Image 1 (cartoon, rainbow, N blue to C red):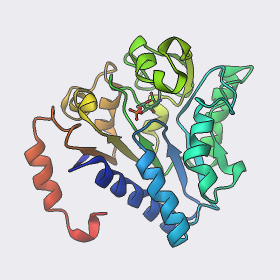
Image 2: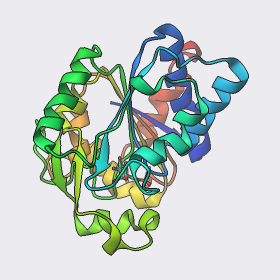
Image 3: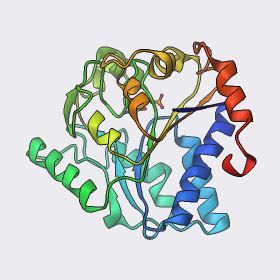
Image 4: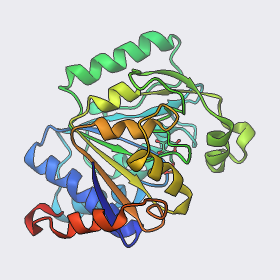
Length: 260
Ligand SMILES: N[C@@H]1[C@@H](O)[C@H](O)[C@@H](COP(=O)(O)O)O[C@@H]1O
C-alpha cells in the first residue's frame, strides 16, 4: 500500500482528483467506483472544476457507487442517489444510463445484488475505486466482522455508524438499519483503490487498516492484500500511525513525474 500524508484534506483531495482525472484522460471509457460521505466531497468539487474549466470529459465514463440505504427513494435527501447527483453527477457530463447506485427500494434485494455484480463485470470491472473509511474501519458499508470475501449484499449498520451518519437524517434513530453495499471481495476485485481519510476521528481506523493485522474487525485492513492501493490522508488521520517517517521518506523519493 502506498501511504501519502498531506498537510490537510484539501491537498490530499487534489491528489485523489488528479488520479481520477488522469485515468479518465488515459481511458475515456473508464469505470469508476465511487463513495459518498463528507470525505470525497472536495475531490468531487475539484473534478467538477476540471470538467468546467479544463473540459475533463465524463461522457463515456461508467460509475458504480458503493452503497445505499434500504428503503430510501432516490429523491430522499439523505439517500446516496441524491448525494451523488447533488454533489457530482449533475455538474459533469456523465450519461445517466452509465450511472449505477444500488437501488434501496428493490423489491428483491438478493436478485438486485446479483445483477449489480453482473453489471460491474459487464462494464469490464472497476478501474479505480474511491473509498472513505468509517470510524470503525468499514469500507462501503462493510461493518466489522463482514466477510473479507463478501459480494454485494444487504447489511445491518452498527449503532456507531448510525450515530456517525445521523447528521443527514436529523437524528440517529432516523437512520435506516439496513443498507445494500458492494462486498469487500467486490472492492478487492477493482484494479486500483484510493482510500481517503481526514481528521483525528479516523486515526484509529487508519492505523488498523495500514499497520494492524488483517482482520474482519477492521475491514479496510484487507487493502493490505490489494495489489494497487493508495492511502491518501491528512495529518490528523495519520496521528496513530507508527511509521509516518518512513512513509514520508518513501514519498519524498518518488520521482516528480509519478507524483500527482
Ligand atoms: N457508507 C459510507 C462510507 O462509504 C463512508 O466512507 C463513511 C465515512 O463517511 P465520512 O466521509 O462522512 O466520514 O460513511 C458512510 O458510512
